[in-house]
Image (cartoon, rainbow, N blue to C red; front, top):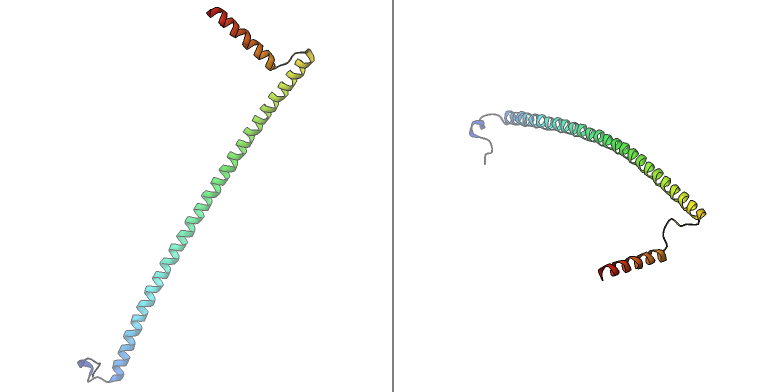
Amino acid sequence: MNILPEKCIKISPGLVDARRKVIKESLKDGLRAWVETRGLKAQQRRALELDDTERKTVKALLAEELETQADAISMEKKRAQARWGQALEKQRLRDQRRAFSQGTCTHPTRAHVSGLKRFWEGVIRATSA
């Protein structure tokens, strides 16, 4: 069985081997160039992805900064509310002390409320009868 084409039968085997080596090397060179371009494209894509992630991190940093500013504002509001609540509580305590010193109570007792309720229920019954 002859592996060589019929044209090559009269050509020396050394020339055929040399030709095959040249074809093989040119094929390898083509593959190397293809792999190299693929590698460069992959590097460019990675560089773009890194740029995108850096942009995202800058955006995230800005968002965090805005959140901390918002937190600072909300903390200031909470402090103001606490001060307002403290002022109200102090005023309530002053009123209670004044009422106790005068012998009265700022809040009606349960017995007083029940008495007023009975009184007005009696008034309503008397007018409807």
